[in-house]
Image (tube, rainbow, N blue to C red):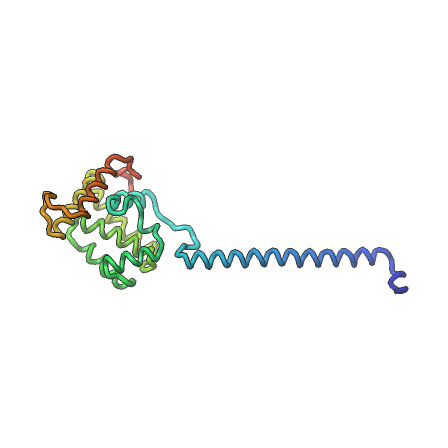
Length: 210
């Protein structure tokens, strides 16, 4: 004790400073560690809920144009913005698609079918859902749907024209009279949606450069 009392005053200052710095370092480390643990927990919860960690990349105006082309079917929503589970359920239930090879096969069949809104709108929806389900690379998906949208755009004068041609294809597929005199409930609902979307400002101009 006497030896300590005999030390110069600045030795005490150094000791106290070192102690305070050590304590501050411990506190900072605990705060950082706590934040890292919370961020890791948040990311795990996001993954479990089907949300991606990075922002979804949707090229515009292409994405908005596809939304409009599919509006009577999806009410202006996009399968590229649904959860992976929703996209997987739709592909499995409506198309019997449960993985990349089946998705590729379906897209090839739709892409090689005679040009019509019935085939091309369905291809757009399946492709976007396929990416969201995790069955196709995002770059490959957008590169594949762009020429399909451009082909629709070149053949039609408006979104309404696309929608009506889709109904023609559906009636033929469902073996319904082409004049709409015996439309089923689904077709009548889509006709109502067409009327609703005709009265709304479009999400994007039909002649936008895609």
